[in-house]
Length: 363
Image (cartoon, rainbow, N blue to C red; front, side, top):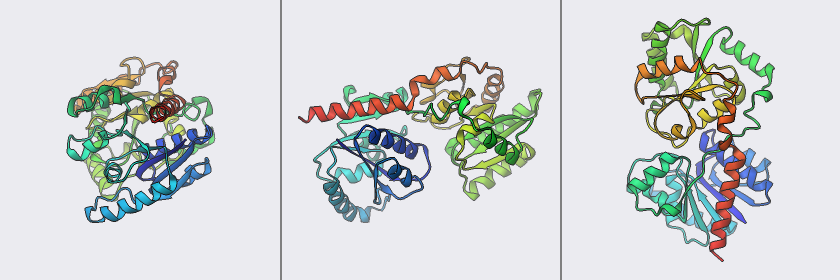
């Protein structure tokens, strides 16, 4: 079997990381793995694990370049000759719509997309992977898709990597020193700088927490991820207006995410829009850290309030502050056990099984 994964680019991000992990699993099982996208930092990980990467612009929304790109994509797919094309985003799905197919198509909804004809193109596949029940319900509610074409396959967390016993203490110590985390109660929010990630809401809740709570170690807000200069300035200005600047740290892009979680006390997702899954939430819990997330989207599949984390009313800073406070009191010992069903191994096995089922239907 030869599988192509089609996506805009291979920069650092949740979707891209999932593509790398699935490619590694396919190659390990003697399945030809091919990724087609614009180049990015993660391309080397595809080739190093036995897969192939072809550079191609699958992400541009320039409609005038569509005919030429469809022609080039057709030639590339004819050369690669895949059995399965797994499309991971809407622009690639539209390009694929104009290609003559000699293969099966699978799509994954990596977001709870706006309801539109543009988004509907992701439903034009033999099988559709839903990373959460929220995504499945969204598709059933808004599109004419038979339920049997929808397959619930949660995003996978690498439980071998995200394991508290695998932490490299020298890396953790370096992070604590660089970010001045020692003797602080650390509330971390992980994700790129975007209004949709809820950084402003997080800071508003954190300000309430600082004003209303008595911590044995002073609270600290840790923002992990890539921020544009403009967005970072907005967050800094908000922090200054809330008198939070001394308690705010920007970690930037961090490769050692296992150690970042280990340096945190509570990990927060404050997304203003429902997320398809909520990978950072599951990763944090795997690292024995309680998670806080809004009660919508994929977090509903992951968090059991009062056990492995706390759900709060979306968009409510007061509710988020209370949830963050409550999360500091949750016992950590049994947290990891609650996310075993979200393992990378299980995700890879379920996805490969779906590929095989589609292949069997073509014979």
